[in-house]
Length: 76
Image (cartoon, rainbow, N blue to C red):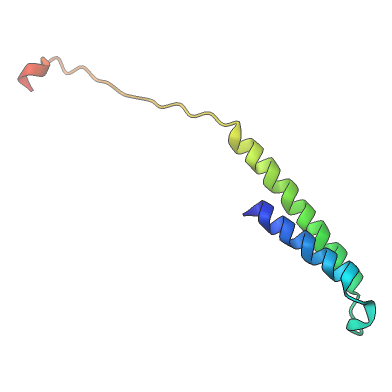
């Protein structure tokens, strides 16, 4: 999900920055908004990759507890 969200933000930011003319909305700096979206998208992709790398390097140990009751298995 994080990588997809990051790519989506990158694409939307690039469209806002490069494809929409600056005079489309008066009083709003679309270039700045686009660059902020692209920065947030790049940060989301980097964080998603780091989190996936950490998740891949974990190890799990199963602990199985076995108790002897002193009663033979045939009499249980």
